Length: 470
Image (cartoon, rainbow, N blue to C red):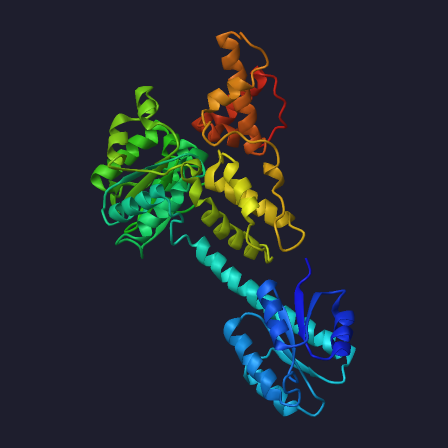
């Protein structure tokens, strides 16, 4: 969509010449007097105003134009104004610039000068817009605030503020993409430890050996490849906060060592004997049912009770869908700025479309969808979101098993066949969401250390062909 220029000039020939000169690059609106200018400004989005200072009711008195310029700068300070002056009115032009005019050109018109002046002024304006929106984007990126005005989000904010000041271990529970790390960072930022380090670790992405070496550090020669001493996360986070993301993926042996550190505050580097004391607040997160994992023996009960001092439940987006417009606007601003684009706010129709979707991937999925829409937007407006173009499940139908069962290819199907069908579709979904990388898909499904092997077994079992990836 072309940017819009409003030409305010009482001379019909001047307006026509400017329109012919600018129409290939800009959408041009016209006004012959100040009332017409006000009408155009109130009914249209105007990106730049070209203002003749010689206007009725006193065409020979530039103070009329200068007064209107002052009014524009007060009422719409972000809209640049380029003034038109007589050939011998440089002093008037300089006054106009002091009042806030972006630039000026004189009569009679030099087409090249006029076009260059307007292009330069428009580009300066949009550079300022990009810088402002980038700043807003970066401020949003810092995640200083939890966005949302719904009852669920108000309760969550209150709980976070209440828990932040305590030294207690906290367990954050919530589905994938709900913003568990954001909650952890907010707990840290609002705590007395805010000026100390915050270190986040994805427990599901590392082997037991790597986790131990990263958590506790190691001495030179502790194992093959340990060429020098390395400080672990417990040392580097001392005085601050250590965030264990997806703590359900911790191997049992690492859980035991972490339990001892939490109880005593002491540990040793791998390959070393020195006792190291570290003052760290531990915050954990999970999308899984840790109680169920305790019951099946894959999670230590003593470690569970040690980290489950305070629990914070993060609601899925579908449970506070009324916050979607606020979230979508903040995400749109950030993504557009990071892509170097200026995108208009979502229309009511677009927000309604977004609100009808169930968002199984929660806010993370919303971010990805909006980023994709911004990247693909041809102009300054998102007119469609292709990934949501098809029919979507109802927001209140969130039982994944029920959704899969509705897709079964036959009725009266035997239970074991239904389970096999569900398992196959689950494996296929995990692969699709993780770029067909078996190890990553397996970790996404919570398989832990042997994620790749288990995924390879399931792919062989269901004859799912996947190109081998690391």
